[in-house]
Length: 390
Figure 1 (cartoon, rainbow, N blue to C red):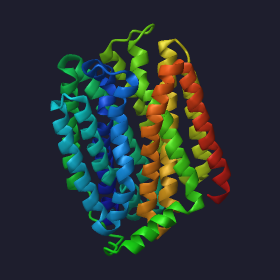
Figure 2: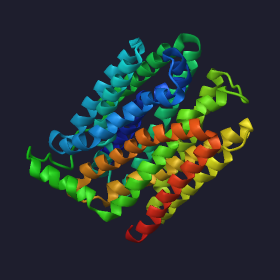
Figure 3: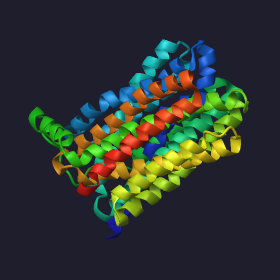
């Protein structure tokens, strides 16, 4: 019993540090997008490619790496993935050509896919049953801590050391977390690797793509993440521009709103284990919309309060949706189902981030909000249709 309890603790701490490193690296440039737009003389919609490129790389690599992890082994895939992403993170501060940086971010996103897509399946296998909701909630909490710390560290350091100094600081922070992840993560123990044969791997992918009960979380992943990354991509432009005129270092502190996601993602997993996934997921989406509407205000305090509510609601929904996939995917296709969820999640980030940024440039914050509310309503509709199956 003690051995099992100790193993679960190691898995939880490893998932927390791994998620922190991954999301700090993935989203750090978001805090300095206005500075990068000035550095490279590009408009907001174009500079957002530095975020969309990484999430596009992740989306494109999600299914292949999630499928191959069934044969390579999940721990090996996750560790190699994070080490490569960290290496690129250490190189990015020295890149001073926009197209080259976009290309490097694309490769970095593809690298981290090995962790982002495999983690859900690994946790479902190694900490399943009564531990799954709380363990998955802690992993998602790690994603919020990573996203928050990467953005804040980058934004604050960049105010006196430039954007390259900010990104280097984040890479060093992620390096410490990467070392902890490698040391803590236990080997796969409850699932043997599949042989290097394409047919069973492809069959698993087909099963994951044709299981109707998984369509709702796939939809939530795509549309919810599209809305979420849009808000955070353009938030800096709104805060530092007229009429608010918030100094950049202080604007970066708005990413402290991620702390709300840390709390709600951890709590949502436990509540969903008791109350069911559909009601908690619909509650999360509703809270997300409420926060989005509150941000229509021109008052800084109400904008920041709305951001906290918006962030908490989104991560509540994401935590439950990802747990839904891990729990309801066919056992033989759990890795592929996880990779499809991540494909939808990061495709939504890439496509939605660009579409939402374009909407902001064309219609302002109000028009963008209307578009994002429509996306979230469609996602909620998918959950309502599927709730009888959960």
